[in-house]
Image (cartoon, rainbow, N blue to C red; front, side, top):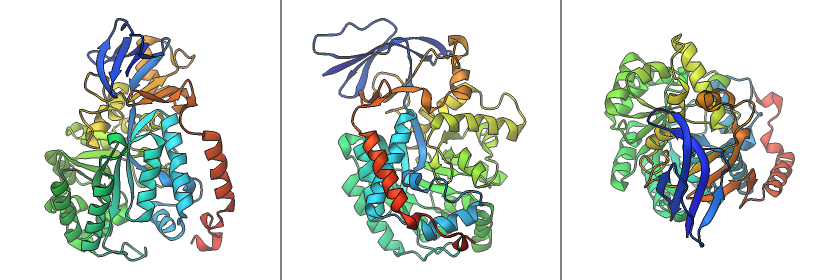
Length: 445
């Protein structure tokens, strides 16, 4: 069946001016893009946008969706202590994992996100997470993290290097390509502070064997980054570079504590960087040095990270933060204009997570993953300044409709496939009963 999405407006990439758009979708793929009306056939499914703004679905390039149940618990602490709290206290039951991830998916969809790059864990937690995302209707690049080295006073690794790699391969073969192709996977060493060089090299070898990319945390915390120097005599980036981890198929989350040489290595390798500004500021990771990477030509994408650290899965809020932090960090008022940040959360994000050429643009041959913004509204008018207003003044609350593969998951503000009221009530019940989610103040030292 064909789907026609008509009477919309959009940003035309040649000059970013706003103009009309009509889309013909077949088999979940955009077949035709036209400024003129596309005449429907009697059997076509037709959605009339009535002048609303349609853009590529937002790509959240680094998420931990189960952390929706951790929001507000571990506030007002620095990253190192925050990581310690999370590893010791944030232990969900299978039911809680599924509902927590579903709540995160609802928030992401409601905010216009159509694709996430989810970093979860090996084992039952990870597989429940993947199932919940698949059930939500989101497109997902799932990554089950591996670590084989004890970081700080965290619990020791449960698996050896070889066991971790074998388990990652098993989960990959079980889930890659599922959910009608909406679900793909990458290989994910959790980050050098919790990995040996042997595991890093093994992850690169496994990713090459399976024909996919890598997703890892990198230089997130000052203490953790300094530990690398003590442990290896080199920076994190230098170590993972010699392990073969860097490359155009790799996404590096955070990248705060970089040396000049680190930035050069990332740029020369073609690696992608995912910035998570709400997390970096809330748990005081440090100022994201994105302007310097941007000037070196690094592909920069945006991630909401986990709600336990960022507080939000709203990509529009994150996009605004990226631009404002970039301006103040560089003291350059023209750093990260609205058009650049718009690209970071659409086509740059798609490229970073391995979906380049598939999503992120409204062009023939791309999947019909679309976000519709309610327009006009008092805070968004008019068309000549709309790009700026979307980035600096819009939030997820302005999202009207969301399509994945040309089918509406949200239409006119209402979910078409999820009973949000029932899911929210279930989540609230679990949170109220989950005393283990709230450690005693005496434990938080």
